Each structure stands twice: as C-alpha cells, then as structure tokens.
Image (cartoon, rainbow, N blue to C red; front, side, top):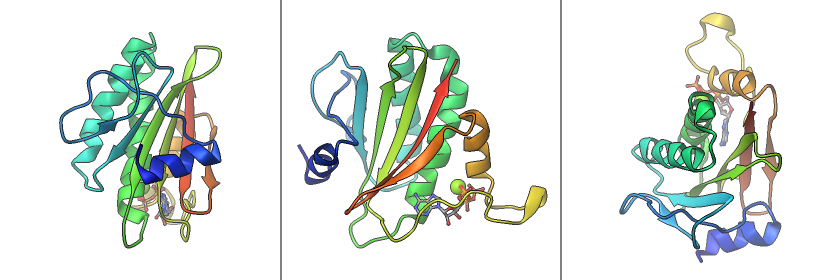
Length: 164
Ligand SMILES: Nc1ncnc2c1ncn2[C@@H]1O[C@H](COP(=O)(O)OP(=O)(O)OP(=O)(O)O)[C@@H](O)[C@H]1O
Ligand SMILES: [Mg+2]
C-alpha cells in the first residue's frame, strides 16, 4: 500500500481493490481481483491518460457496462487531464478509482490529486467560443450534473457518475 492510498483509504474515499491486467509500468494495481472497484496510481504525465482509459474500458466490460464507455471515457479524460494540468504541488500524486454503483447500472469515476489549494471551477468564463473551460461543461453533461469535489486534508477527489 502506498502512503497516498493509505491516506485516502483512511478518509474513506478510496477503497483498495484491483484488476488482473494493469499495463506494466503505467498503473500500479492494488489488491486482488475480481473487484467492484479498481484503484490505480498514475505517473503524473499526459501519457497516463490513454492507459487509464484502457483500464476503465476493461473495468466496464467486466461489469457489463460497456454501453457506458463513451461517456465514461470522456469524463475520465477531462478529470484526469485536469488533475495533471491544474493540480500543483512539489510531489504530485494522481490516482483514479472506478467503482460500480450499488444498483449495478452505472459507474463512479474518481480522480484524486494532492493539490488542496485549487479546486475545479465549472464555466470559468469565455462562453461558447472559449478555447478553455470546456472540460467540466462536458463532465456536467455526461454525468447529468452528478459530479463534484471532495476535499481532504492532503488531497482532493473530483468525481462523476455515469448511469444508464
Ligand atoms: N483537479 C484540479 N485541480 C485544480 N484546479 C482544477 C482541477 N480541475 C479543474 N480545475 C480548475 O477548473 C478550471 C475549469 O476546468 P475545465 O476542465 O472546465 O477547463 P480547462 O481545463 O481550463 O480547459 P479545457 O478542459 O477546456 O481544456 C480549470 O481551468 C482549473 O482552474
Ligand atoms: Mg480541463
């Protein structure tokens, strides 16, 4: 267990579960399979995004929720890209947690980062022609506004839920 994962687990925001087939060197897998939730810690570089997408698609297939993949992948891409681009700090830590909702008809996507000084701000201005500030508007649409931020003492989780 890494320090960060232990920290979040203690706060009750991330459980430890795993999947059998994380790509070598990209996401580190915690715990045994099969799982109702999967947690990965990622290298804080843009190259982690496609690897995280693949893991999410794999989790969705395993849960029989592949029909939600397009919306889920979009939400993950925006939240993880935000964590990589906007979260600051001397020792950035970024992780993801994917979990199946209790009724089995949806998925919760969480992206954790170690920056408590900055939080996501939806509709940061600029209107329809803005070059930036579109990501959270897309998250809003794909999650039917079921997304938010949970601030902890040493990090935060930005989450979104996609359901049938
Ligand atoms: N994980 C995060 N940590 C800190 N600040 C964040 C985080 N996610 C989002 N933000 C803040 O919220 C703003 C809005 O995010 P949003 O994704 O909508 O736009 P963007 O990332 O600036 O541009 P785009 O996603 O369109 O390329 C960001 O500019 C940033 O200031
Ligand atoms: Mg963004």
